[in-house]
Image (cartoon, rainbow, N blue to C red; front, side, top):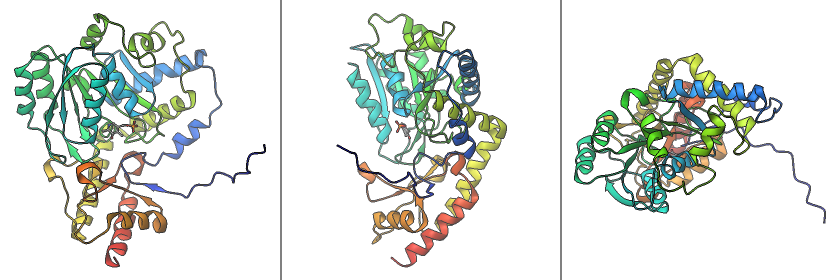
Length: 375
Ligand SMILES: *Cc1c(COP(=O)(O)O)cnc(C)c1O
């Protein structure tokens, strides 16, 4: 049977202002077209060192075990849990949005006794709340989300929470998927044990790699496991042999994605982290001002609001889906809606990495004004 003749790939030139992927830098896309070398080629091994060094820079860490996990952000999340949880371990998950919920689901799959600490979607935890939960019981690990992409809230007090975890002998896992490269993430200064991210959010490479960093304390915990890691692909004791000194085969590294991530990280280093954070902040403030001028108010109060993901409330009587469809069809702009308890109530506007530009903000604001004035 002959397959149907499909058309040339020719997607519309979208401006990606949703929760990810963000628009990839042309330099990153160009790097992906670089001819392949083998995954054990000395030239690729040298590139791996560069990627690791650049990852340490964006994570602000000296952690030796700092690697791009093959897979999207969720692979980073799963790596962060499956390596440090053994069946029966007590784990605490702070949940104030969808990704906290996902952490909870995953921790359960690995047989942990998981306790939930909850806050309504859109709110953040008072760090002392987490600290007192950690005092009530002996946990092996506590996990939480730094930047909750489902709500637009930024969790404060990470260093205090990390200190409380360590006082009880627990490890702290931090989801930095929507913060890394867009706002301060300081793994060593905050004493975070395990942090993961995604290539397609504030780093603006395509989805496909999950930056991960693991402290020596956590590595020690990994070495003292009584049972093998219940996941072959994401087992850090095996991955460490490829990314560490030995450089022995585990799985074939996604070569082109590593080219992409290297270029994305090089862009971050060229810009400088402080300048990059300031750019994200300035463009977010421009967006907030403009949304307020359109009489839209934000779900998250200013002091806990993410600069990388903004969540305006949908005004009464407006069909949020129609607005999003018109943004996409008439203006080539992608934003997202809310889900879970926030379904139909908010829009989610990402200004991440290469997408965080004043011209994108002004285009979105005028398109929104145009659509809202006629709906
Ligand atoms: C996007 C995201 C993830 C999951 O990443 P995927 O790349 O979709 O697998 C996890 N946590 C947060 C906070 C995210 O925004």
